[in-house]
Length: 237
Ligand code: URA
Image (cartoon, rainbow, N blue to C red):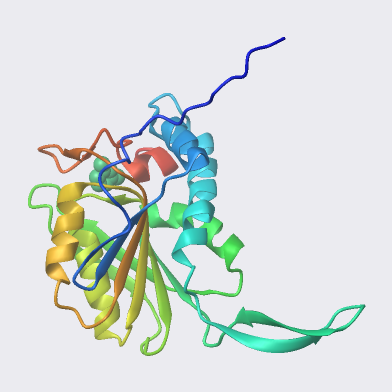
């Protein structure tokens, strides 16, 4: 008779402390799921090619979005099944707004819109200066008024947090009061910067990430990370 096999899930680089954690108005949720850990490991591998990388990002976003949309607004409606009348819930209007940060956030859009096909999509073009690591906005295509809209920012790498802080402030200036960011990887330094920036915000901000990595290196890259997400998604241009 074969001996039973015990499968043990070993801690990954994402296993750091207790999550979800709350500081002020900021909630951080680090995913703990063996499928996410598996996909992240293949994603990180420098030998993974762009088509596989894009496919994995799409799949990871769907898994992370499942958690990130836990509080998406719904309304109760009555329907008739072939058997009986019943009630159920559907997404409320106005629909959620998904905001990929160009360029790398675009790679996350397909997975998110598969999960919420009726979401509106706005774009925010942000670039960080590789020397100062400061983020600035170079393009935006967003509704003027985001009052009452649930906003989901997509940006694969939460490194210094500069881009995410700028993006959140941008959405708040337009009236958003319910903001969730979905990232594939995060660095502790960036998480702390976001927590500090919005410690006294009156609006709740949630970050859902696939893993909390070890640190940033001197070039602002996440370690161990996955390299430059934009380059790995679309090739070096
Ligand atoms: N942006 C990336 O694409 N990778 C990092 O590691 C940090 C920021």
